[in-house]
Length: 157
Image (cartoon, rainbow, N blue to C red; front, top):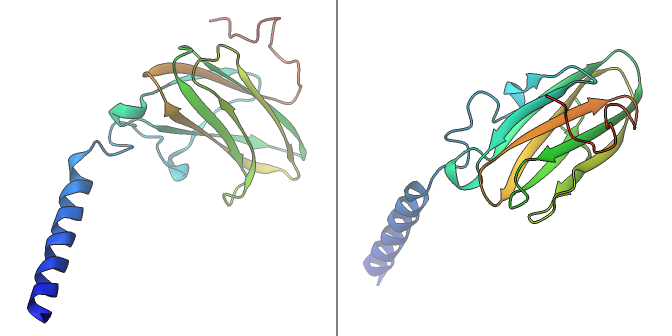
């Protein structure tokens, strides 16, 4: 009985190991910004673009902004394809979440978020694909709620 249990346990572990290795790894094609310690700097008041592909191994991009004083931060996320979903989250320097907003699949409206930044220093922004088609996106961090919206909220490249 004990040997049968050992065989069943070994087979289960082997099956689990093979199953994990068969799919595309979530960040296998993400480039150099898939994790918080790889966050790319972005300037305040400027649009930054990127790409996400949920099913192709590019689910997450990290950005960071640096503040010289406590403030309120405003974010706008535009996703090029309405069929794609994305979530923007903001974190303090040690990774504590400060807020998030989701652009749902099927929506064409940009996602907006305001968070308090209670001190100077670095704040991290995670843009994560939640599903749908591969897409490009644009994100902007501002100190003003109306900065750069230009009526439509879309970047002017």
